[in-house]
Image (cartoon, rainbow over all chains, first blue to last red; front, side, top):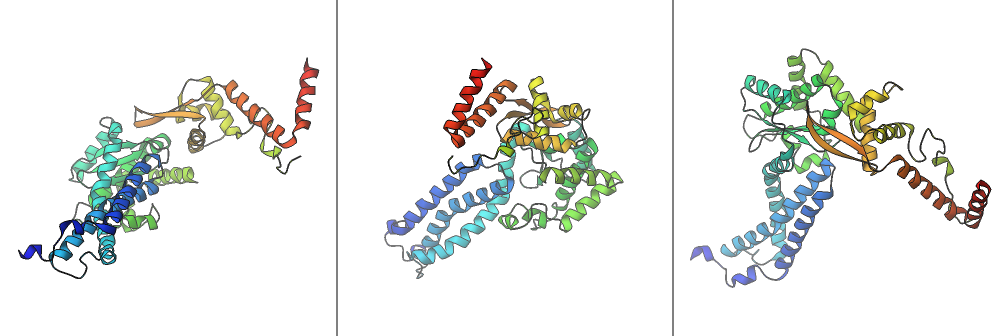
Length: 246
Length: 127
């Protein structure tokens, strides 16, 4: 059969150095997963999540590449170095895409006990989601004192606000933050484009500032000012957040 | 005397700052010691009567005390979502005892027999 190509001994595909590399990679994936529990810093957690996804994907891509090379009788068959050359970028790419699905689900899962299911915040978000013509996102409180807010539009839209932020902001300031996140969600409702905001959750964002004031940030701020008819609450919220971080 | 130098200036020995805490940390802990638990805003409201400070400063101090292991906190639902409720770990006396222990241990490590002899003499005079 053409598909089988040059696959002679199937066990050889998974043997030798490749098996050791795969085992090592899975061990590192496990270690990263275990380490996640101890890490509180958001950027560090993102880094570890992506590391975990990369190391988990690496064996899959490694063996798949070898299978493909063997099936097509290519020189890379059982050539560990060449296969690693394919597997590293392949696993990285897989990790990035998985991250856009895994990371939102991860945050929803770890914060589901603190879903804000009722109250003025929910009513506020519901009202504006309706006005903006979008499905009402879920609201979650993240268990950290660091004041921050972020949102995802993945499987289902969600806005996350830290408990620390709710502790230090006044009502109108919280509303400003929610409007800001709703604006981000609205912007992402167009085709799955890798905007600056989405890239916030990609591995590349680790090289950039967490609060990168790109075009999307300015648009979201403009939306807040338009809706609240003042920039006062947004500026006050940013001032308080900045004071906490300094 | 051994090679280590005890930085006595870092140990503030007046009641205003309890040894290793800043004045604001001391005030915040003082409120938690008097009440079982309190929210950031509750502590800020009480402290504002005695001094000028920002709500964020209280939040920062509470987070710092939490990281030092001196207070515990839990996220509780309430008006406006979730808020942290802080409580002190241990009593004021336990904290003071801990500071005294560490200070005395450091003095003994640094000055050895001289320190021991001083403490012995001091306690003898108090009797």
